[in-house]
Length: 185
Image (cartoon, rainbow, N blue to C red; front, top):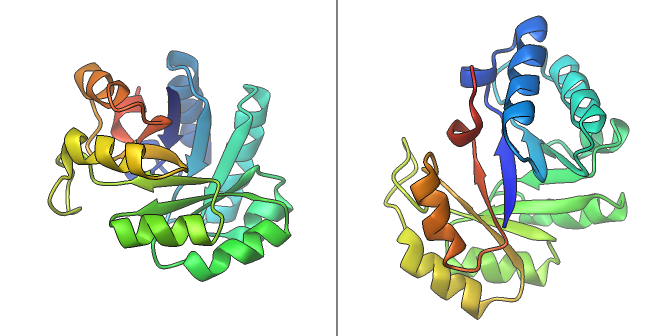
């Protein structure tokens, strides 16, 4: 099962020096298959994204994504972009730039839309309790979605312990994504 680290300025900071240290520690202490720079608040977003891509490449991470920003992902030579559930119409634009696409899905309609628009991966969430993300779906619903749809599904939401990961493994999910699980600050 693939592991997908997602950053957040709340945990990784927007101070460039400390961001480098925090990111490197998380990568060093965990087996990371996929990684996403997610920061919706920092004024130095682009500078942090450059550092993020550089450190990810130095650590031989092959699947490097930026959240929402297709043009920046392309210009920094990231692998792809992780789009929000309001950006389905942008999948085509990312694909035209030869970027891989992860898109966030929360309903079966959104999963079907992701398949229709030819996303490469989806995150399906929230699986467990997580702040401000609504009622958790749980692993039984996740397993049903994995069995029903032919797309690489990454579980997301409230995944903070090894026990959570073991439960997700039992669904035959492509992978799991988390912010808090990978924090080593």
